[in-house]
Length: 239
Image (cartoon, rainbow, N blue to C red; front, side):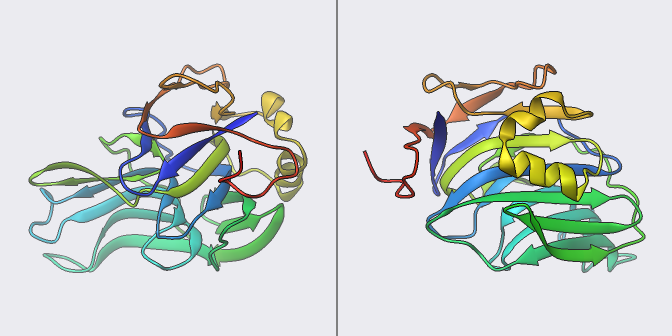
């Protein structure tokens, strides 16, 4: 078994413009953080061409962004300033960062109901909401970083410093029982319904990160390196 190691500077996996989620969805992964404010996975756009010079934010991200803790965050046409603003919405379900150990994280958006965060199979945060969707955006889906489109060009931001393994995207709100099953054994994802992307990160070599959902959403590794997982070992620097 393998995982991908990200340096927190310029490593990420680029999937192109896929994984728009218009209603309920769930995202998750196994992760190990060395610190910092990185993103585990995201489909996100900061559009400075709309509502200049403040821009607007749309999309979703799972990780530890902006020093606000581990969380699932969703935003839609969100801006604090500009004509007709404050506008849109920004929601999150969050908990304290977890450093220097492996953890399983799942974020669930249940349309019109709630945003939930699970750590190691247990719900740790819930934010109720009446919001029902986020818009499609012209931006790439990333593992290990956040995409922002400023007027001067495309940027990669909030790079993850640590390891990522067994990442997935499902276009429905999965149940707490399903989350526990995934935590207990990632092979549960092989037969789960509405699976849009599943990256088990077991290639061990090369620059492709293959999607095992059957949907062909393969990614290109930018700088991240392969690490062989040692059973029972929690030191990511061990050989």
